[in-house]
Length: 237
Image (cartoon, rainbow, N blue to C red; front, side, top):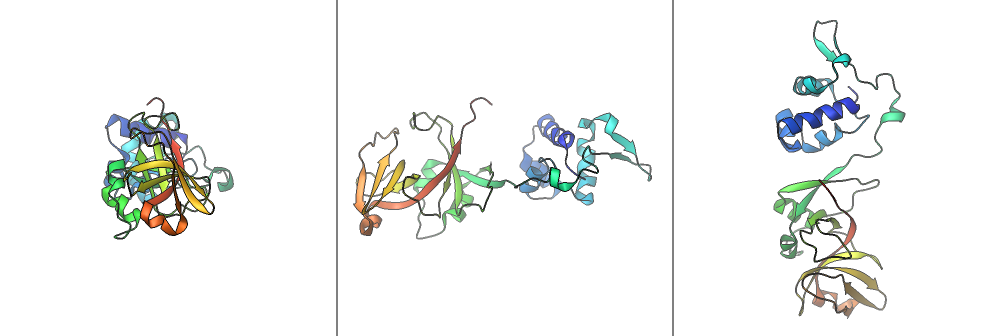
């Protein structure tokens, strides 16, 4: 079965009507959460065994004129993409589920103990979709900024995606846990040359002074650092 817009709408309506998160549907279907995301992308395929379990759940939300009686005498759905070549419908990428953690948990990360990837997964209670058109950055995690203290650079409620296990490049926005007198988790602009400079972005801690140090002294000033890949903002739910 190819996923069409009707199937996507039916899955969404089923989740809404039952006040069910996608993760619960995944558990009910005995699949991993990314499968539910895949089934909500036009052109993706659903295997016959999975469709046989999903169809009864969403049948009432599908258009009645697309449901027919097959040769076995059972109701079946005719997707609108039947006969359409895959090159016109296949998704170009499948989103990954990225763990969301609090900025407080990010500040407790110890790079000597484990990777940021495993740490974030152990601390996360929810996740967010990330659409990587190329290879997924290493150690991806997300932090939701719950207040407006990072404005005007980043709006309130922004979801910031960080590559915790990758190195920043010159000019990157980074999330960094500082040592020395600051000892806080901040967002900053990373500049590198003969020395490294961190220019903090406005935040509630009112840290505005640049932090500058030689590359050889980085461990004295930085606990961990990761480039910000992107951030997204939901202006209205």
